[in-house]
Length: 382
Image (tube, rainbow, N blue to C red; front, side, top):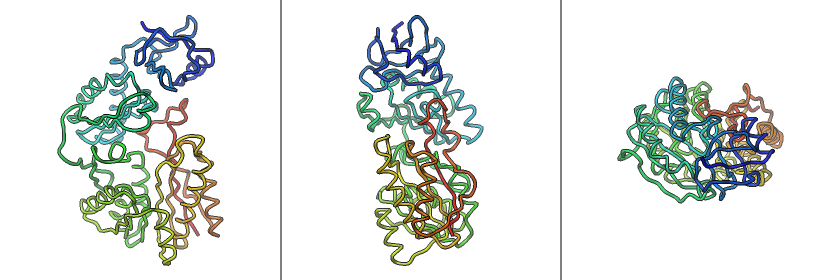
């Protein structure tokens, strides 16, 4: 068995449940990049996982027992399918990397189609096995989306291909009272942001027929489509042309109308405010503005500007739905940003219930705090 020895600091962290060992905490290794290894501190075995000396994360722990990679993958995939299928049928985040104790691996299921993303060097050669395991649960088409900075940091080349089967066009999924096209090949990330599903369906409860709704950073229209299905008159703001086209397709799919503005979000909000436009509901769901600790201060300033612009567009007593998917921005940070933006505009704000987060299929593994990342606030603005 290939072996990697770690220092006392890493041993303590692993004993507390951590899944990562950073390169500076590796003492020595009898292994090559990508090997499945036994992780040891002195004579004590701490677990097993994949080794990559070329990555900042030199070890990713997959199991505390003595198992082969195939055994761990099959067990975790089966466990996740069982409990997530109870919640969501056949559309869910099947594997959420560290959140589901499979570091580096993401799998989204859309009916009989699955999309796989991988950022673990050693796991790459097992993706064919992963695809075959997914087929046991009614998936017939598996697409690998292998691009991005995470793969580059791991020393993995960009690759996009069908691992199993192939579909010609889009997948159609159901989400509450709405339906959506998913472009698994050309869409962002895995093609659809499943983490917001509970927050999107919650929005429907707050919409009255005829409400004027502004969905900003709309992506493929998730929030706004739900609002339109509930009877809202929705304006979507989305910079991406492909995403804007998908919004129009999703409006047609649901038999509802809406206006799509393909333009910069902040500039558009400022322009609408100057024109005197006001809305019953404003949704703000920007992309991650802070990837790491060094981005936090700039991200806070941008979230402040975005929320201030959104609040200015609300009618008195209107609903603000505002989100952050940046892990380094804490819930306390985010609540403070929104409060400050309201104060700056001379408005009073009431949060409706607790700060919401990601859907349960995006499992939070508490020893890895980055698995808790999404914040979503529903607030009434006077």
